[in-house]
Image (cartoon, rainbow, N blue to C red; front, side, top):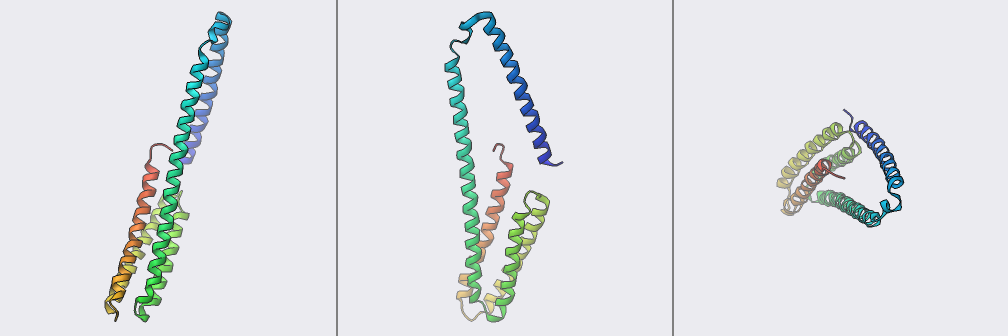
Length: 187
């Protein structure tokens, strides 16, 4: 089923439960105050302070964790863009007849990577697009290896292939990071 629907139902039930329990607590407190007078409220200031201090601490840790995860994802996006850009620039080292097909594969690959993340709440569509990206990676690698072997300069293989390897590695890293973020038990 749709996780957004279940999330909305859970939030509604949670909000209703909180309101009901607040009202029950208010009534119990009012009855106790009527029975015992002002002595019933003594000592609650310290308890309230401790509860709010703990709540503030939990809130601070939550924001700190969220900021760290956001920053890590942002760094992965930048790293992937840099790795793709570096590999794209090194296409110039290939023989002239291999450069145009390689640039076309790169454009399709980049479009596929962008589409993977555009489709993201829909995990099935994102997985299908990721599979397309991986297929394009394989085609890029095969063309790069065959073209590098035909190249008159050995720099093509020594410089292009490690850049392609970094591009492929960062894709895997980003994918695994996204999967781990989705599997995390708390937000």
